[in-house]
Image (cartoon, rainbow, N blue to C red; front, side, top):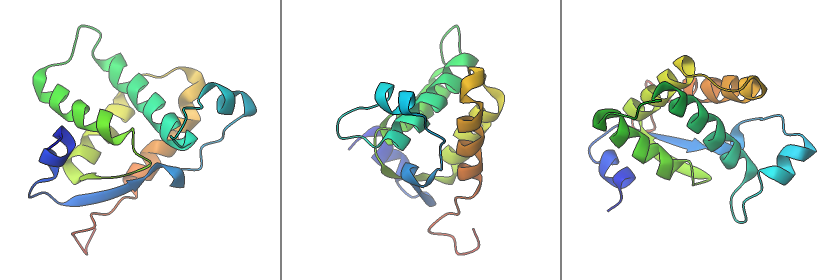
Length: 126
């Protein structure tokens, strides 16, 4: 069982599909972000999340956050993923407080907006 699978045990689930995020991608982005077998929107989400989270921990990440980031590292390799509301809130907070290069501002805002609209699949009240 992977880290991501263990985190889902007995938790409210949220389904994520990075392809749903309307990232503005220029032709240069498409060329530089292409990874065989991985959707470019997935790569863009991983890139902006990694940049924001990394900026918050220049001296290293404590284990409590490291265990959450380990799950996200797995989830951001999948075009469609399932996670918990708690982990969505954690990443959303890191995106809001972390720093990114100015060129990633639009992607960060779109990723935050996307995470804000993800209701829990197991919770009919969202």
